[in-house]
Length: 116
Image 1 (tube, rainbow, N blue to C red):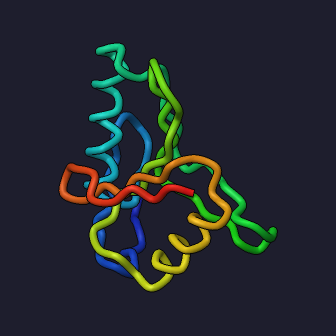
Image 2 (spheres, rainbow, N blue to C red):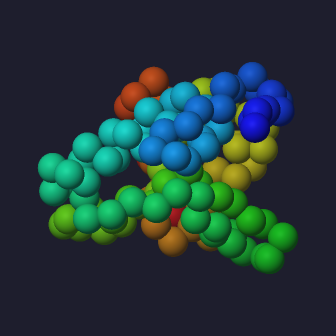
């Protein structure tokens, strides 16, 4: 059986890590990093693609990861290659309606933290 993936709009290459398909290599790489942090005991758990409603039911946003640290407050992460107009809109909605911090990951590091 051959598995074919449709090429995403922004030319990100889908990748598979630990039998899970991720939208990009950067996202799969971040999942691997979170697994390392989990094994080291720095985080208790992480979850992928958790649905968050921002205000009204039509405003649905799915950050890439929800991270539960061993100490402190959980946060969401979104891995971005570059910022799209839709993400700029989502950032404004997150500031108004988000419940936890959203960390934007680019090139392996946090480049922006959006606090509600």
